[in-house]
Image 1 (cartoon, rainbow over the protein chains, first blue to last red):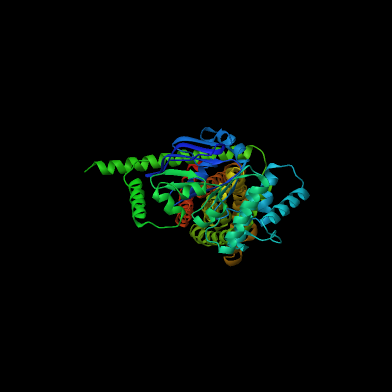
Image 2 (image 1 turned 120 degrees about the horizontal axis):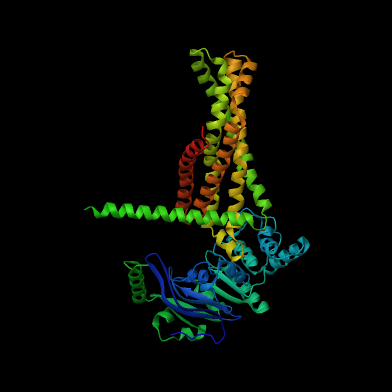
Length: 270
Length: 259
């Protein structure tokens, strides 16, 4: 069912994940190519954000493997995970910025923690990274003084400041106006083109996905995934895949998805 | 018929044991974070300010009020036996041994413990702790340990302040309102309080209460469900659990001290 990339940077193999009685994935297989922008699509509650948390080692699957940059994160100790996460930047849906710290201190924080750079070098790096996401003059603002779009850009800047090899982005477009969405899309494409970073973007915005994705992983009801290049998936044999990627809502498919979600939730032991 | 109550008891027991196990592991992680570098001086000083300095007014006012009540009740009761000269001893011993440490801990729980649980719970809800983990920073090291340590550090200081204010309140009522001689009040106080039996016990109590409140507040916030209701529950349970624990440990320490 999947058209897996030849050189996966991140690989999920036979992953089973459940929260209490709710089984999110029964046996998920998907992969993300190195140096490309991959988008994870799916309905609400299909487990899109769960994939990012699995990749970051924030949660562990009940079964299966999650391989990130050649390392299986499922068996790593907390200390080893700390080392692995230095290769990963993560942009959270709500920003997850430290709300008592200014924008400058939020960006400087990982540099102060993990490098021996001087204050001057840190300041230069923070301003350079803020400029790269199109922000200036926001150093002294607190996170609650930022607009939604600015918050996402600061979160992206913080995710990128340690120059990771993988960047995980959770719903970067949700709740933004069309101009801000296009701005963030442009940033992703520029960052990816300039640094060759592997970007994994979770989104339910099909139009944005079509514009930026080199590779798509579509989560279907039942916890399985279909993956491949956008053009290939638009011609996919499964009508549900075509419907999702072309924005055509098939009421029968919607009902089937709802029934499948209900079956997964009710009466199934963890 | 009888199965359900037994199941409920079993479930409650399992939950209780799991909670105890969770808090024990959490406490071990906090101690480990405190004993290993880096030293988090700035967050610790920030917490000292928030937990200590911002609690000064409530501690002083409460200490003064409690001391005044003790002075009034004590004077009237002692006067029945013609022993009003012992007012300093009654006020001082009550405050140093019991009321100072216990009321300070209860007041600090209500003001600072609940705030700590709410703050950490909100950080859980807004994914700030996950954000720290993804930046390879241990949230227990950066968020929890400085707050728990600050609670241990401020409790003895606030307790001492409470006692001083209480003694002054008792002095004010006994001497200025009831007409007791100031020298008699102070000499009675000085002669009755022993360092080992009273002051050291008081100090130990405040340190233990500080550790308990710090641990319970941070644990409740850290383990809270990431919703607004979860933060609310964490805050409420911090106050309830800490208050009961303080009173239980007060009895245990008092009995172990051999008084």
